[in-house]
Length: 238
Image 1: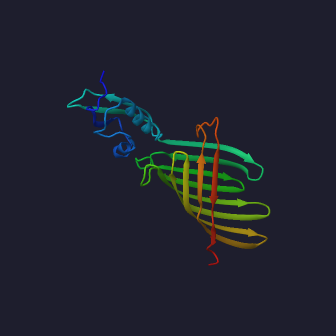
Image 2: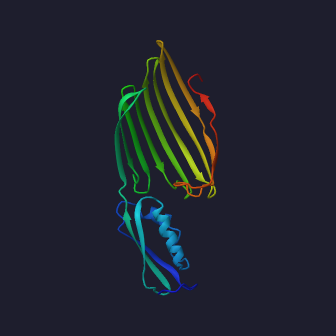
């Protein structure tokens, strides 16, 4: 068994069975690097940081015999399936019969970028939504999301068409505190009683969220508090 020692350091770190994930992207996710002091618990933390990308099923570290007090590490990766698709059929009293489908790719450009589409087609309402997320944007604790939404709704009283597009920059300020800032443009056209109204609103949403839950994915205790401000500017009449 290799004993931990201040004179023993981590040697070359290699990946095995990486297929569609960019190696440099994964290497940046590691909490260890060549030359660090060799400690087994730090290797376990590094494995966990890779699994938390949600791009892989497992990461197994093989510790090789040391050479010149340097311990090479080989990490074997089992990747997840990066694409999912879903569909459904339903009925709602205000929309009628409809079908929905969604598609998502969680590794669009080999660095964990997530692209998703959501389509809903009903008798009286149609929607198309899309999102593109870049994780670790310019910083490990930062992401940027681009989104768009097109919607048409028809009722007995009016007909409306709306389009929204925007961007949100998210930053993990502390382990519990997150900040969000973005920009959004919304356009809409409403036809009611043979009169047409058009709207164009530019907004600058910003928010803070403090999350004290024990587990955000399966909370059993704790609390969340959030504050949001979103000033609007009418760009149709300016």
